[in-house]
Amino acid sequence: MKKYPLDKLFDTNTEYRTRPRSCYVIKKIATNDTAEVTVYIDDKELTHIIDKVAPLHTINTNLNKPLDLKNLYLVVPPDTKFKFSGTANKLVKCIGDLIRLDVGEALPADLISRFRAQHNHYLTTIIGDTVGTGTSWAANGEITLDSFEPSSAEKYILNHIIGVNEVQAGVDAEAEGDVAVLFYLDGAPLDIEESGEGYLGISRYSMPMPPAETTENLPFSLENSPIEVGPDHSLDVKARNVSGAALFATTEAQYKLYTVCEYYKFVAGA
Image 1 (tube, one colour):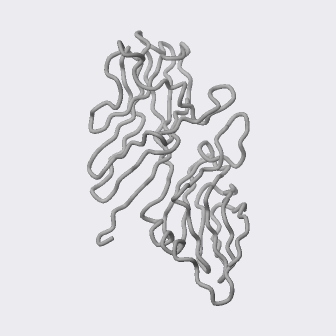
Image 2 (cartoon, helix red, strand yellow):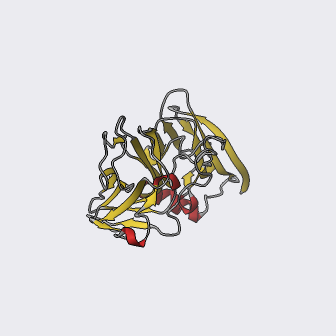
Image 3 (tube, one colour):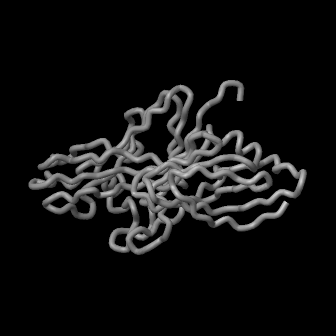
């Protein structure tokens, strides 16, 4: 077996197939598609990405990097078809290992095991809807940016980057500390509950998506404090006006949440 660096571009909406003795191990992935891209390997739906979260290039207006799949890397075994479904004429970049097997050599057991499990356990991006505050957003008013409600056969683990894109700026302009992001697990807040302990929630300014030179250089991440949403539980991510007065008297603000998380589907007998 020989291993070479994989850093390769692929067209969206094009079916590819590895050669009989070639294997791709995709450890990082990126795209220039401004809409959602879905990865298919062996006709099975896997990771979802978008340029805001996983850009082809790290530049001043988007300081994110290709999405690091960590231990949930994707395996394309020999003689296996794969595809990236998205907007026409866009690109996907895969970074990792290109493996060439010798004649008669089998794929290593760890890669076979990962391939068999990956369609039930992978890292993905969940994109919320655009949500508006309404004009004259009342003090302590909340809007739901996204909700995670796995079925009895699923769970989500939020353990990667997460951020809020300001789709439309409100007027009068929002200032630092005016808007907070809060997490509610089964309705219970995962934060302080009184402003006497400090500002409620996480400042929206600390969670830009994408991070940029003009906002915040570092993406916000839940890697060190993951939130697990088990079967038949719910997680709501909300934005709250914590400014102490009404906001956006003339034009509403609009936000969209981008969450990279681990998705797990329970398989009977597994």
